[in-house]
Image 1 (cartoon, rainbow, N blue to C red):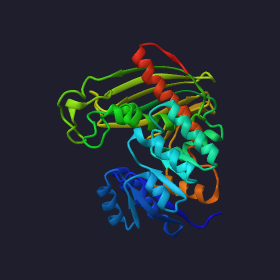
Image 2: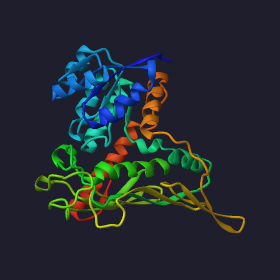
Image 3: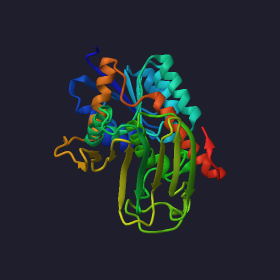
Image 4: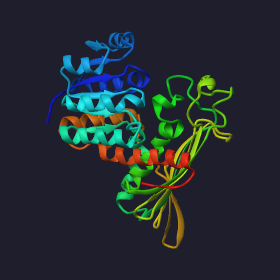
Length: 347
């Protein structure tokens, strides 16, 4: 078991400075953030100064060549995930890449292949897996309390939550809109709780009804004149074990709630609503609802980074794996392909 890991950060934007860097810092002497890079090198320099990071660079190539690293966090737009990840793995580093894995299935597979060849960990930033609700429900599921889970729903819907910053509305850099951005969080959470079953077929539909016109922005004003992604996606996934999952994701929709992120599951012995956590069963001749009286209050981002650091130190597998990333990417791209073709797609 290693005593300490040396970390490099690729990308000095919001997710790096709000999540990765501060939570690596919370790991104390077990982690040293050695370097950061960004194509906008002045941003990397500013972040290095703010967080007392010794070295900053313009490119990942330069950082990997000049800095001695054990671990790399990839915090770039989706388009650049694959190249930065593969380069870091080939340089002998474990990699935590932000979600989604990549732009295409081929890219996600190349990342997984590089991880396997290097013998290093590749994990993804699906922080909802690390919530207390998911932790608790997973224990109930593993104990057989829900039985065979055969149906589920993943929901990631905002009333008017188109991001007014970053590149979230740029298809060329992101690969899509709410489905690949927030929808993938709830999709991964559902798949994780269901045991990551093998997908066989998807049906998807996407809509661009609200994003291309000026409107009320609850997350800032977005560039509606250059909005190139969907503002809503819906679909269904069928799995080899017979289970099905419905997904609904939107940056903007005419609904009551400002923001809903949730997963609902149904098994033959029980069902569950994840956020907030409730379980539904039939026992001893009665229909019962089970609600935890207490769940630990902890930041899922902090827990995610802590568990990732522990995996890198001990060599134990991370909670989110490269192989799961490929499976999730197949579903995402399959849904987009189905929407474009107007028919179900076999995976």
